[in-house]
Image (tube, rainbow, N blue to C red; front, side, top):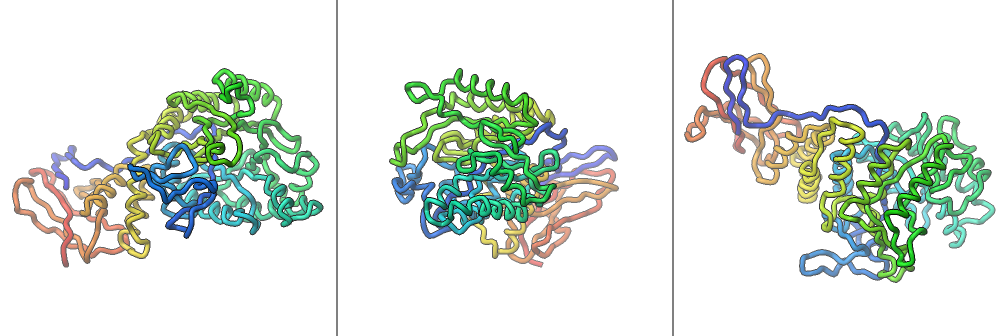
Length: 487
């Protein structure tokens, strides 16, 4: 509830007004490398390899209720499925609130081989949500898929180039042409982790030759540029670890400085920032560990991200959103909470957009949203529609309104939000928990009185509910509240 009083120029509002973020656009996009390969119960019938690595059992819970997974770190919401719409909404909300501009998805093509088709389907599902959130997307194509498909008898060596031409035509049709696809100099950005199979410039020229001129990729490979490409991107250089298999800060700094020196002669380059590297491979019995890069209480992420934001790179790649197997994760975890996304917020505000207003308290709104979405069936039309409005408010910067809506949903009561006044009228929206068939809007001039007057009884629908009423130019403060009722 809230009071309103007017003397012609003054309003007393105990409800925070609708808030919209204003600010200048970032000088370069901040993208985050995303892994869409997780399979989990109950969304699917089984736990996928990336949570188990054929060694760990997520059915086992520790005394705190934390599942055993193939990682030293644990998602704040627990291990999840990459195709779950509630998870994807949660992820893109966190990105938006953290000041991240989009995702670069680790992509294995669209073949029905191994888990590649499932990863592609999860990628498409993610992009449905990034579009809703106003985020950009791009692909990091793993050409190691060709190597594995040849080894598995799925693909003949002689057909490798023509097959990959078809893969890139698929990407052109389904992704490159999308208005949300990230472009550099009007060409779709395409990263390649490697290359692992196609090592020659001529092979990539042949692969790209089947694409339209406007969809010739702005192509970036790892560490070293191919002539057909625009440049390269950095990655945690675990091959430089010392005799103790630790990558020291001085070694990391030298690697980044050397890369930037080389990149001065390229059309563009991508700077990556990362929080740590702590893989689980040896513990899982998959392979020897690549070694470790210390977190240093967040200093590794702060230093690499500040460098990426202030150098001459064309775009920034955060490594990674959710590679739990290698420990480079920046999404909220039980171990680090929202710390890493808070660092992204702080540095965006410091270096790219001084008006950026996000903080870690806002990030918790995404988690509250996720909890409500999990509890709410999408077939339950009224609360599902209200959650859709919360999503919209969060991605458009109306965080105060979203917070009021979530307060109502969490408390099981209606909420009054988005209050405004104009021409002797007060206007507000009704949301939060809406159950039954109607909600009554009531007013009083005394909070301690039981004398509340019902101004209107509005039928509950899936549409956004709003209310307007005239106010007196002079008079005592008036309080308003919403109560579930019957017409």
